[in-house]
Figure 1 (spheres, rainbow, N blue to C red):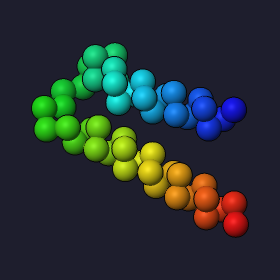
Figure 2 (figure 1 turned 135 degrees about the vertical axis):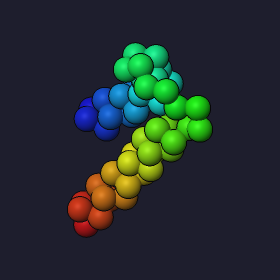
Figure 3 (figure 1 turned 180 degrees about the vertical axis):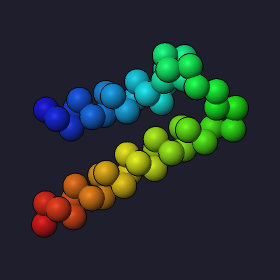
Figure 4 (figure 1 turned 60 degrees about the vertical axis):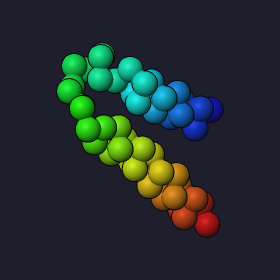
Length: 50
């Protein structure tokens, strides 16, 4: 359940975050940071699980 919410929030931020929050990202660095944070969160979740 929580993973589904996290994935939905990630997709929404990457897809429509720039328009919603008004950030300018011509080089795609904000989206790259979002993807990196999401991947590191997945890795951290698996490591904490055991």
